[in-house]
Length: 213
Image (cartoon, rainbow, N blue to C red; front, side):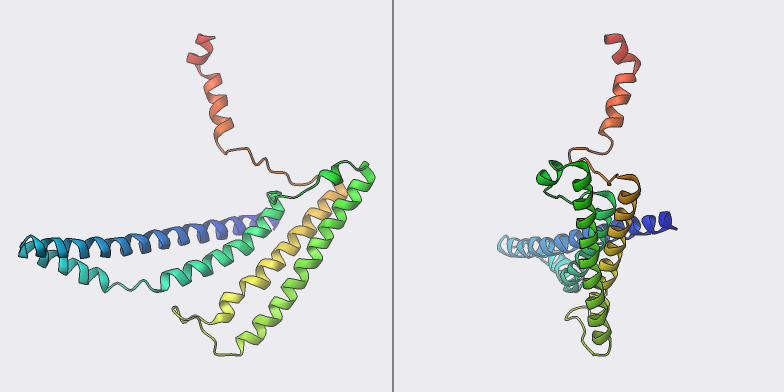
């Protein structure tokens, strides 16, 4: 069950990142293409090239008819959702940056207590945010509030708060439970780049490298 949840979490975050990236790319290309075509229209008019001016004007107005005003608002919503669920993913994988210089200097028993206290405090805080967020979304659901551009019900937008915070609370409790039983915390090497270690091992094991040595 946890594997399914982990996988769904990763798929959701990856989908949100990909969707936001594609939308931003399309919106930027659309904006700069309009500016470029406007310059071509002006240039063709000054050079007395009616065929180029007519062609560029047709492309300009055709491209201008594509309405991407909603793109910025949608990207903001996608990034909000990505941030909330990404924070939960960060707790599970240990990628959140923390200051633990003092804690690491403590004796093992006191260090374990402080770590467990920190994890439970994180669960308590995110649990409160999830509860307050759910109450806020519940009241928002009974209003007619919609987003300016997409005209999407605002309760759907704010739904990221209780869902993401609840998942983050669960991840804190999951890590705390694992730490209390095994004494291990999820750890992520911030200097590690995926694929680099495998590539280095492959180069070291290749016949050409072995021959050179």
